[in-house]
Amino acid sequence: MADLSVKVAGVSFNNPLIAASGTFGFGREYGEFYPLSKLGGISCKGITLKRRDGNPPPRIAETPSGILNAVGLQNPGVDVFIQDDLPWLKQQGTVVIANIAGNTVEEYCMMAEKLSETDTDMIELNISCPNVKSGGVQFGTSCESVGNITKEVRAHCKKPLIVKLSPNVTDIASIAQAAEAEGADAVSMINTLTGMKIDINTRRPIIHNNTGGLSGAAVFPVAVRMVWQVSNAIKIPIIGMGGITTWEDTVEMLIAGATALQIGTVLFSDPYAPIKIAEGVNKFLDDNNISSVTELTGTVRPW
Image (tube, rainbow, N blue to C red):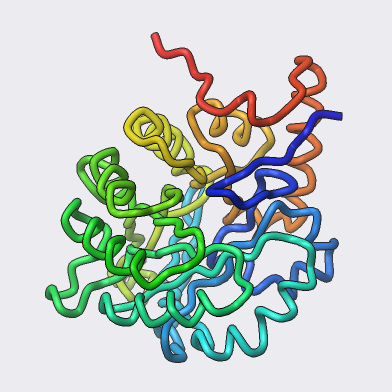
């Protein structure tokens, strides 16, 4: 059998499949289906400095080949995560990535400091959050803001730092370069695309927040394009995500330039998807006499 192990920013994964933040909770529910050691890693549900109850419902709406969500980062807060969830996660035999979100740079830095003193393996910076000090503009929408928050958090973070990129920008390659220049060890991409769905009878948006993040198979071609563009612009590893549903999608994203992958929305319809994908990738590698999954990364041949 082929070698599925990969390394991202010095951290070893037994396979490239990571459960995506926001789709896997803290792993306890999925742990009833199979040993979490079968995953390469878990990017935990986004955590904030203090407890958040999230947005009022409805918070999720189905769309063709995807879903819209505006859950609003419902979570118990970083201190509860460190005390109650992290010890359990560290017993599961998989890489643990803490995904952090905040409304100010200071909040991000405080969480990075707290988590740096734990045995969390990596920290993922969710910059698709409103910066309250800049009128609510997302941190991840300009090179300047991405560079600034990466630089500030890097100064407080002792763990390998992943910056999660928003696709809702004009030039994602430049955004990735800004993160790399200020100390990111890797980037993960793409986060959700902003979308909207309206009830034609009530004429109200179905999601109470009015807009939400679109994920699922519908966004996959956008994600592949952006991973390819960024892979040509930076030297640090890319964790690819966005609509990966099958083993064929996984191979395609790796060829586009990803080193590892996050699997998200498909988990809601098939909790066993990562297991099936790993088996499919392994068979593809064996059938093509490829000894390691790392040989696929960045091998696309553009016209």
